[in-house]
Length: 512
Image 1: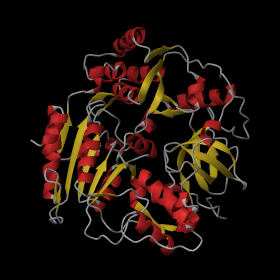
Image 2: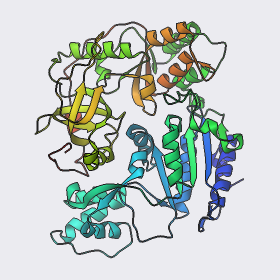
Image 3: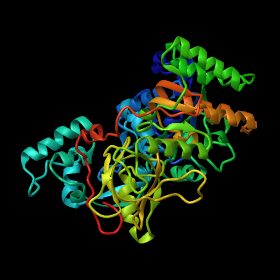
Image 4: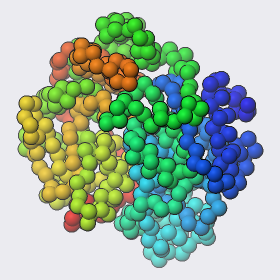
């Protein structure tokens, strides 16, 4: 057993050693911090699974630090040197910006799957700066950039390890140094994928094309991707390739939310029993709230989690109504969910620009106001490294009992959005918020229907995913009521964010 085992529980130590064995066969010896050329053997895939609080993220973080300490280069997706062909590489991925940002807040340099699949193309002049910053070249002389500007770039990179951020600190715009985006052609070595329960088969196959060594981290108690019959990609692996963490570490810190989550594993537990547990927890601990109404103030930054789409639409319209939002316009501060990007094939570069900025399907967005051009919106992408973006927008406001959504304004093409004041539990996977409201009448409806998914009552899977989205406080809403807002919607807290590191200039045909 490795020395790392001293900091681990028994199941974490066993998982660490199994992963270390896999990496050793791939030419990376963590015990002695030795790097060797890849052996060229068959591709390897392994999964680390466990419920919330089992220590998956701790194990991921420790393995990342061990690989970095051994000299493995961490690939972030914003710049890669072409000069070090002998390098060994690691990329840490998550399916969504929100999930990646959760890891980054814990010191793990995660990026989205899309940022690894599509990489930026740098202008040759400014690529010299990037090579210097990453230790692969001498300090360049660039016309128009002073020594002081280059020093600012170096100081920024030393603290943040972001090439676009460093170039922005030197006074450059993204359009100065990024000329486009391309699909990755060169494979990498090792991929860590967090929240892998969200992966569908196509994404899994794409990742296996890039990474000969792939380590998945996932929670088997969550909801499988829609259309996969309740099956997650790691459940199709051979049993010996799946390492399960059974011990729940965060429960030891007396976390009532996780206590509730893990109580759902009891096959004898019925819905009414579970609600009594929530009531009891709420009496003992203010981290659990037995809510008599939906708190509208929280909906602007963290959506109400529901099961049924009809419930989602009713809550969204109630949210807009109490804020006095007009039907023909959005108010600054309204939350949105990106539902995809609709651009013709000839505008593929514009699509890649937006997706690379974090505007991918499922991204949580706050509307900041109209753009400079008709049909454009200024947006704040939650969890993105560079959150401020302007894009041609198609915003759909769905109405109760109406087949077609009302569209207050729309560009001919661009990013499409649904309102984000409420979201289905399926779409909430991979996200976390400090405070989470769960609309209990929907879960009761699922329990009454008696539906199951992969041998588990559906209401239990829904409840598990919903309550584990809460980082600090869970509000279990039991009545179909909405509070009044304490004040108007605001965006000043978002505008106070640091200046964006990467800014893509407005174009005529689809993005800005």
